[in-house]
Length: 481
Image (cartoon, rainbow, N blue to C red; front, side):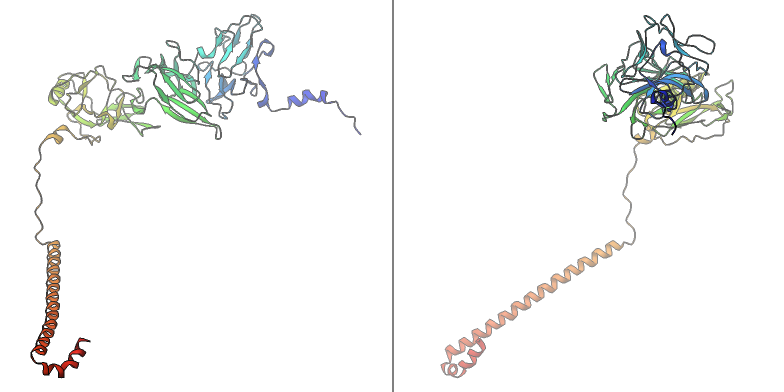
């Protein structure tokens, strides 16, 4: 029999053979350095294992990594925060705690990507809290959000700025921002949400409720046993997601912008955005324009003399990115049209057929175009007078068609009507029934009257002729029986 080997000698071999997914740590210190991206199974977990942190490869490259945070129960590892989305690192990078107590992630060119994380000493540790925040002494990831806010993460005025990813395959910063906890913008300054409501967000609770500055609540999800996140998506919309732990899938339970096409930058210049109302949208060229590569360009350029042009009506279409978006309060349609026609920079005008004198001129550019019946706007697009296209955006009723009087008259009856014949037959039948009933009733009355008359005559005869009565009494009795 072969000699048995003590278990403590086999323990290192046993641990090294374990799957990398169970190599979890509650902290990272100088003694744990370095931490390299190719150590795939090495992660940092929060005390109750709600959150995890570590290196993840980005979708468009298996050799590029970012240091990130995700929910441990999310099998897809949806990233909630990342350190170096703009500067992914390769396998040669390393995360370390230096002898001076600084936390460093060496980038491709040797620069430190983990700035401002300086500990009190080389005993400082990187920890992942149960609220999802990474901390290293006074440094915390909550002060440097990316595109997501977690439940109970503070919204800091003039500091909490979410920046959407550039696209689904990259974690580099894109063009959409959510700043001051209340404003959505495109390209930093082009605001598209909220409208007149300036109340910011204070807190997203674990129960899926957003508390706002004015005390109002936004209840996104009544299910309290779910993980959540508030994310500024790549399409520029701000959404609350809820994680179904059974299917490990995220569900949208609230979104800031309901009309997706009203998000600026949804389509390029001259395009019209069309949406299904919730999760998809398409960009189409209006009449008088055509697709040229990724752009939408005029089929026939406007002439220098802009008076040689005409307007094509596009119902429920609006553009909101021109140089002049002021309601001019034109007294009538003709004034709004002639004002645009006289301005060589005016590319079209928008109006509403509601009697409120709404008139907006589109100057220089046609940006952020979208179709929506909720806009109540008719856009009159300027094209060359020789343009043969006709509008395919129709369906709005004009004021002229709704306020003009109309002569209302009843139609003449048809020459022959089956209804008249039917009614006449019914009336005649009823009359006949009543006549027959009357005759039968009168006949029954006469018959009974005749009977009583015969009895009276017999009694009269008996009283007048007693001798006859003696003879005829049996007969009379039989008749009365």
